[in-house]
Length: 498
Image 1 (cartoon, rainbow, N blue to C red):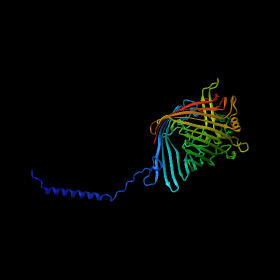
Image 2 (cartoon, rainbow, N blue to C red):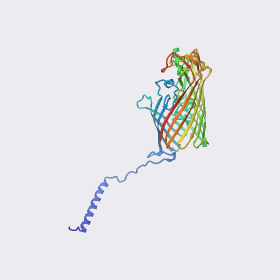
Image 3 (tube, one colour):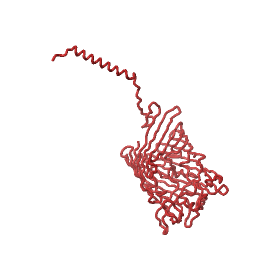
Image 4 (spheres, rainbow, N blue to C red):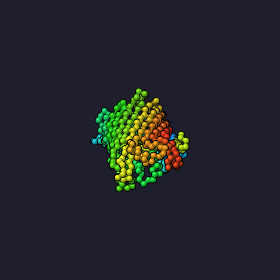
């Protein structure tokens, strides 16, 4: 084989290099002269973990939420609602004894530092599927949607009357009454002043239409027959609800002290009680004069108790006059009816029924109509929360609620019933609740919990009564024993928070 000359190898190498350079130059001609810089997402640590700068802006954003699966045992609705009304209260076969709910919660928190201070927006929405939902796609709930700027809050946020733990001093259930609860937020315009050392004060105008108007009953029930009037009472509804539209928002004030040892807070609210007309469909019938109700609340939270690290004790005490929703708040009903077995021979079953109202009036027109007679209510609600270990914790919670009708309001209600033979009529009532929940958190932000609660309805009606109709599946024109009732309910929950 003839050897290859060194000059030939050198020539070939130079030719290949030249061709490669020529090809590279052709490719480079197609590229831009300078590539744009990539904008990386930057951590925004000034507001805490989880915040990032929105690329190209000075606004920080945090995405969060949770996914929750719930099962309520022997309740009346999701989240451990007691069987204290409707089919569940009647204990009939139409009621769902097991109620499931799946929920995804999404929240968006944005914050921007400005020369006027922090600008914050917050949005929280839930997507739900619950046993008995009529809508094939489930339901959507908007919990919070507000803007905060220079101490002001505009939009749907936790009421300034409420506590940081809202209706959850230590419970899973959304139906521990005895205090204010607007965990899903309320429309408001509020201002909070910070005085330093954990001391703050707030004043707020808040929309009462959805959450803060209880019943305002006209016991004359114009246009209804005597039979129809009697049919209200077994459901705990004392007449035609005659609340007018909102003329003045609720006026709320709060003073709060936050310290390492816990929290102390005093809240107050003024609530307008305003009726529509004596005859609901006839404006010429006139109306009773407007009046004002009020509510006051004291709250105390103690942290880092001697019982263990992270233990706490939360309690509120609330009183209202003409503003019962500040004591029986949130999604809880304002009328109750529970049935059970009888103990008096000749009666069909026993029953307890009750209804909460801001006020009562009667009459057909301005000439014979009465003024609004306001009711009073008070409640105590609290919980002790204990950590057994980093993975296990328990809470013991309870509440006591009382609704009192003054003498005139009670006489209006009992007069409308007609004081049936054998029945001692008194619309006052009390509800006591006690329960416990235990939680297991095997890994961070994943919690399994089980809760049980007992609810006792102590009514003041007594004796026996034969109603024209009770409603639901109950038979007509049979005799019932009027008797206090208690019910158990339970909840199982799995929640992943992110």
